[in-house]
Image (cartoon, rainbow, N blue to C red):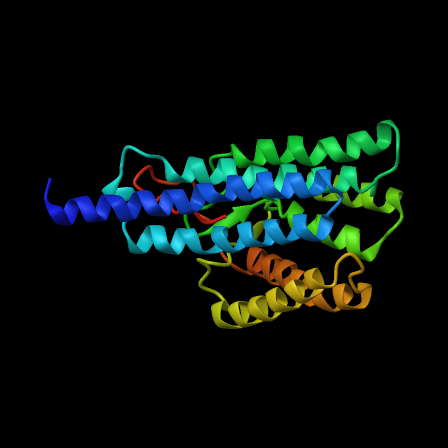
Length: 250
């Protein structure tokens, strides 16, 4: 093996390690949940989201799929994503008593786990032209808003049920790090939103509900633009090629 090939392999393994660190952040977030330190829990999840938004770009730039063809980085990414985007956020919702007690609350908490498990395993969950099919399991964001906005537990339960159902509705949602349409405004608005969210996290344990409502501009923009694209562009080609780049973006 040449020195150059060895360096390329080390860089590729480093990208996979970078992705895998999300699982460690999930553990740190769960530890914070157990201590009722919800600000810390959301902060760890936010860091995990930053990793998830950047590891795919690194993987493509360093040709990770080509350098390490025997290792499935996309599968690693899905495992980490399920922990940080699904399991830990639902644990926060349950631990923080954001749902009604009894069977109805338990069902509302179970549905996202089941729906997203199904969604992650669909071959068309990510399309060839870089969309998510069905609601892309942003339960970390939903959990944050449910916590800060302090809605009634029954309202929170209905929200979880509705978004769980949306996983099965084949609307194409934007893949922010790889989209072609409106990329610049989406990036700009996303950065502004991210700064405002970290500002909100810095306010824990008493985050501003007013600030939370202001930050809703980006989720609403994301949903509206996704729906517009879905209704006004040709349907995505089917079946992701096994030779696709295997990027590790969520």
